[in-house]
Image (cartoon, rainbow, N blue to C red):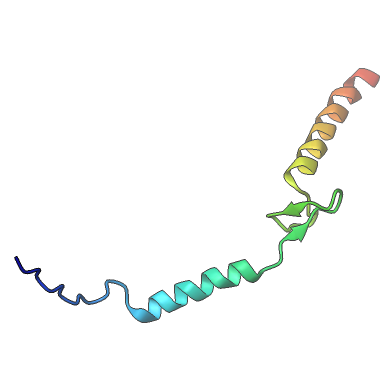
Length: 74
């Protein structure tokens, strides 16, 4: 039995779009991750206060504790 030769198919995605997608992915890898302002861990979000998820949670917890203590003092 003889094998059939594979037909060369046209690419589904044009070469220009494929190259543009490859460049956008490589740009994301080159960006330096920001660091947490408190503990120095890597953060995925660079905002006005660059905090890692742990420090952000601690800050939110502290806000909640303060809000609960204020009515008790009055």
